[in-house]
Image (cartoon, rainbow over all chains, first blue to last red):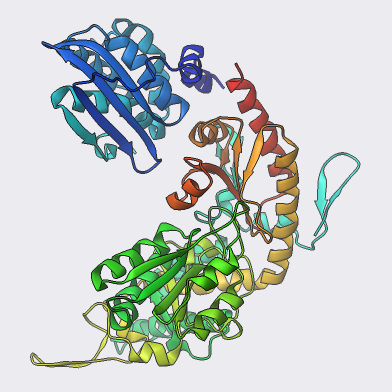
Length: 156
Length: 421
């Protein structure tokens, strides 16, 4: 069952068991809520952005192992990055989980996030991995936002 | 009712239904999924189709491919006759008096919407009440919510207990002079609860309300007689009864259907039309505007033939035995928590395994060829009642067997190993 092992890698299971930055950020100046109405997953992303720099980030919510681990690893990956850098990572991450065919795409550049490359073999689970990222994207763009149905741009 | 264990550990069910034989009627069951024999345990979502139904669809598009109630040529006559025969099959299957009490719709959801938008709009006014239960599928909740919002009425919800059974005293307490409609599911798709339908209908009538029964999960699994039940309306979906998707049934008592306004306008639902005024046709045509799913209705008739050739009594006994076996097997597995322990359970069991999210469980089982449902089962308020985001759900059909339950349990153990720290 190699693709199952690819999906549920140890690093993902670790973040699922012990999610990082899993609190409500009291001094957040940006936040957004993400929902997947089809499966009931929901996540809130809190950001403390100062002059384009993500000083702090956290999340709360409920979801499957993939959704939870993805949110947790996302917070670790973008903390201390600029909004522009975080957007770049989101783009690469999205391409990876969608199974992007770009030959120039460099999986290495994603560091630990490359653990989610196995998701592309599970089209029904792409939304789980990308929910937190879509929510981050919305939170960065405006102080308060709700990400609802994101199913349209992801494969069924 | 009890599952017997053979010395070799494999179980035999006491009921007389040759599962290996019936499995050969379902070509979909012969396929592999991710390299493993398909174990299909999501029958509450939809059922696989027997050859009899598949062949009938093909035949209908060859021998009877014409519109009904219109042409004067032979193909059209055959189509009309086959469509009428299917309606009569449904009538007999449900124990209704007249074919005119059988309205073809797209599925249970459309049937409920039809009743809400016609009977409901006609009879529910400001201050009135519609009573449902806390275990309804969204399809038997949202249409009533929409109706109540539109009419200034209140949607009352009869609560369920920690076992997933209706709390009778609370149900009765919510019935009153203002209750116009009592709508409930006969069998819960999320918990497997079988509701005391006859008593609920009788109570509704005592208060002058009509009873709408969502039979989507009941009709495929037990004998139903609408006259014995004395329900005013009953809906079910063809695709959960081994028939095709896109066809379903609304049964309504003749006197109620006759007094109801049309739902959608168009061809086939009229008696006469001028630019000034249209006279509507009698039921069921009044509620069947436009060209219906002719082939679907005919194939639903074939599905009923198939089910009757096995016998609903035999089906119910077999599925009960298999459910007893499945429930026991799941309960023996440490870490399993059954969601809902109804007094009377149909072929559905919901559970949680350790703290593994149902979607992860669904994905892992899928990779071993096992199809279960993971999620909120379109019953979010019910999930909230049990404090879970969703459940893993196993729902059985008469073509499932004990080996498949054993396979499920052993794969669940593998999932546990995978997630154990």
